[in-house]
Length: 169
Image (cartoon, rainbow, N blue to C red; front, side):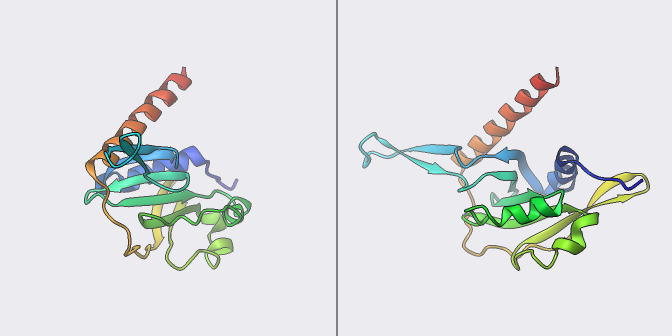
């Protein structure tokens, strides 16, 4: 029987692979998560800044405060559908990767944008592991995030953890 992988299993593999090089890793991070900054030049006394411009399957903050995004694709059709979306995984993202199972790699690798990296889930010795197939090219215009954005990302991660724990009951 051919082993297949689910998105939740892929999320865990990504977490395990990047946990030591990241301050925080949050699944399904929304573009709606914004940070408010005091700004007396604005009518309401504050300005709001989005952390990302699109929804990220996995968003992480590196130890030097840069953003890394991983887009999970478990099928060829899922991968191709990503190109129909209006966003392009850019903005302030320093590194962008696709994470795919080994059994679709040959079908998608020539479609991956040049700057994107590829992580591959392989099934060996009766368990899944994640390996880097292609390194992402750093987005030179990406800037480190500030403490306010880092705190917001930590808070969203905390809330998501408890939301999922409550759903497990």
